[in-house]
Length: 77
Image 1: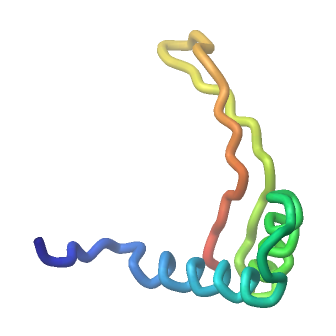
Image 2: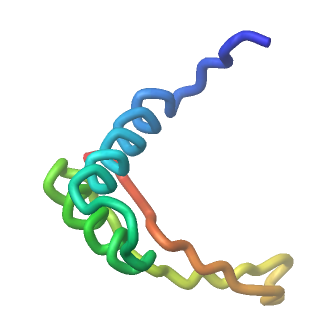
Image 3: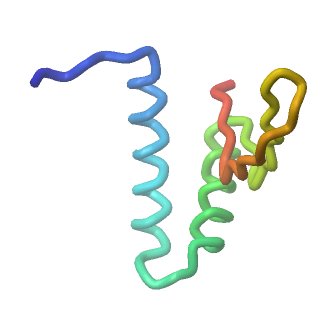
């Protein structure tokens, strides 16, 4: 099966590269929160707008049916 191009390929490539940068800098062995915080610093440095640990309330036909916790929300500036 061949590669499927999407509108987000370049953005995905950039984010994965930044995540590898964080892991290479810190190395293994830290807890997840440490990597999240480091990732936020790197994302802001590279001019991505980001939010951390967002609680989204889900509604269907004006009735709340659940919540989703997003760890990171990114926007390319």
